[in-house]
Image 1: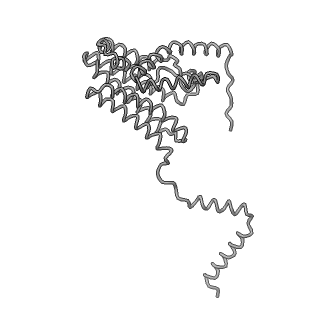
Image 2: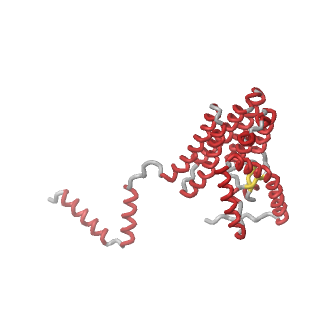
Image 3: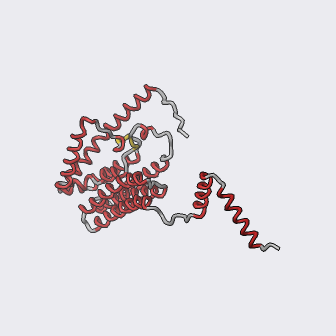
Length: 296
């Protein structure tokens, strides 16, 4: 009588013998399949997914810190915190693309951070600095700035998956972006920091200006996008020299330089509208562009 163990052993030996007759490629494929089946799932989130979100969170902290400094009357630090939030907002997306850490969570966190850092925080800073002298109208202007900033970001999120985006396809943005809108809204305060002109603190001047900037943020005008700017090879050295000069000015006379940058951006808005109108006319003259089928 044959013992069960003997039968099992012979079966195992026969299986091993059969495996030995398999081609090398099939045995490797089988081993890889077993390794994937019994491999441990990765634990936690990779660093490439956390790093850009951490930068976005730092931007949010910086924007809220601006409100804290405004409450204590430290206006220079309040404006500096908003500017730092703008700088961090400009690099978090690039870090995400560089590390391939883009995610839906990161996009939503970025929109929330922008709404607070460039909508709520500047509105509160301006209210505490000037608009509080007109409690009702001043607060209404502050609300318009904060709410319109949130509406702009909501429109951006709603159109993020749209294929038909004429402004984006031409290298422009729709309306004034949130960080630029915050800088424009804070322009009277920034000018006051180095001119000390009493007229700049007047709520009758600040309130209409804040509402005007809020309207620019939710408008449909075409504005220049930094991503679409291309320099000619013949002016690269001159552009580098300009960047050095701007950096030196921001270090030695930050409020003067910041005021000049914001005014230049404001003056460039009519040129961006005219530039997009020219691109639109050229597209209309060229006729519809045939749709391309994406590669499989």
